Image 1: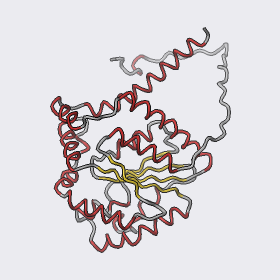
Image 2: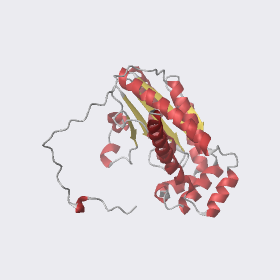
Image 3: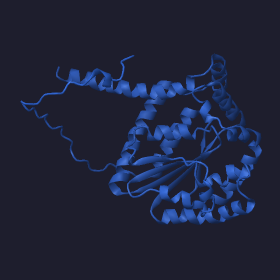
Image 4: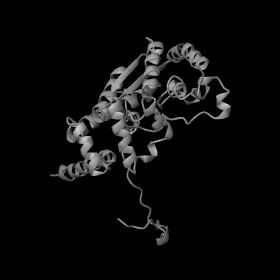
Length: 302
């Protein structure tokens, strides 16, 4: 009988955990009824929500073990997320980092280079963000901007692109030789899927901020991006740091497959943990709590 209150508490905690996941998933549902209907019609074989959450929580538990292993052994991990606009990179990164310690796992999403950065060695602005021992860094876009958006949109000359292709294999080999575990993902979606996701962003007030003029241009230049991607794969898919393509039309399966593959790429294992014992609360007979003025409290509207 003594375990019943404890079990009820654990069930409540698990319920809160599932509510957090459900809250994130509701982002995808904040659409007009018509757009929602069209999306369902074009994605008839979606994974059931309960199955998705069950697998996501299991994989996130493994990610915590990976985090502990990286921290304990002072490993250095870099994960690159590339792909077309709206391919699902951000959603995958969000699920990977959702339950991790931000002091161990951090996301790097750099803005466009400043005028000063444009005069630097191309890779220079990325180097300060590389991990120290015991850290995982996830790049939401990376130095591969030069091979993609900068090239297609005319922000880099062909000479600069050619120099990048000559430099990047050796740059990545240097990273690997220094002890960094480098994993590169490309999230791939079809032309039709990107069009659908852009329409969803246009009609969804919670996601309109994601749609930039550059995104709209990527629709116009779909074929140019395809050619740029194909050359990028051909010239940067090296044995020390190969590319891994994540089919992204099904968001939920893409996230699960990406996390599962990432876990398989790193030989993590359980590490020793000090036993955590909750100390007893100290009670002092002369302790009195000061009265807090009511205006300091946040209004209880819900």
